[in-house]
Image (cartoon, rainbow, N blue to C red; front, side, top):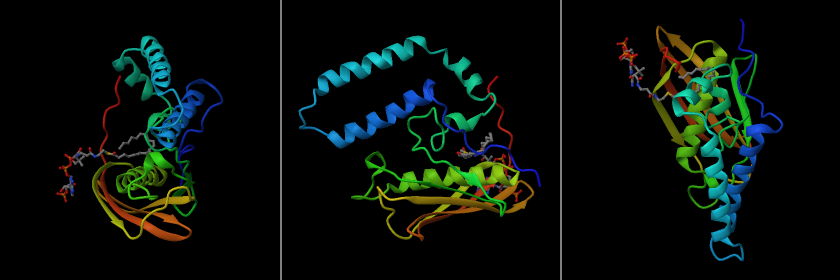
Length: 205
Ligand SMILES: CCCCC/C=C\C/C=C\C/C=C\C/C=C\CCCC(=O)SCCNC(=O)CCNC(=O)[C@H](O)C(C)(C)COP(=O)(O)OP(=O)(O)OC[C@H]1O[C@@H](n2cnc3c(N)ncnc32)[C@H](O)[C@@H]1OP(=O)(O)O
């Protein structure tokens, strides 16, 4: 069957993707530093506000930006899991396999912490929800998440490679069922089952 050409957007050299990579570093470095270092945090805040002021001054109107966001690559440039222009995205890079599954590997740091040294459960759910969405795209029919069952078997560690995978298992009319797992060292930490309902949500125009 014909598979989509692209599942995630590769980060581009330079441009907003390079600035976003720097922003991810800032988020991590702030959390790494915390209070009580010799860093001049008042000065840091001033510099960061100056950067934000300049970006806000140059940005198009939100309505215009939304239209632009949903052209071409669509969700894959800006989504909060794989998007190279979204500083909240770790980012996860997913690839599709001929067996119908999609998978990717990533290592998460302090910004994604829940229990001590472990991934926040909501972050795992986000990674899996999106990965199931991409697995649906890979399989040829996407939908809106209607139900997501998430089982936490063992804590997922920070600072170690994690594998996130998903696979569409059935389509019954508009109902799409998709499963996935987040694993570390070959052992499942989190597994998930999702029900997606096929529905065309109009793109902003
Ligand atoms: C989805 C975005 C796709 C964008 C694609 C763009 C580019 C593609 C590129 C890459 C793709 C990559 C990734 C996609 C990535 C991520 C996906 C993100 C997923 C999300 O982040 S998504 C946000 C969270 N999600 C919502 O925000 C949903 C809010 N909700 C609704 O929008 C409606 O609620 C909806 C649509 C769910 C149903 O509404 P509806 O009116 O269309 O359907 P209706 O009521 O007619 O039900 C028909 C049959 O489904 C059963 N049914 C319905 N809902 C059910 C439920 N909750 N539980 C159990 N069964 C349910 C009924 O019981 C009936 O069953 P039966 O036929 O047997 O009676």
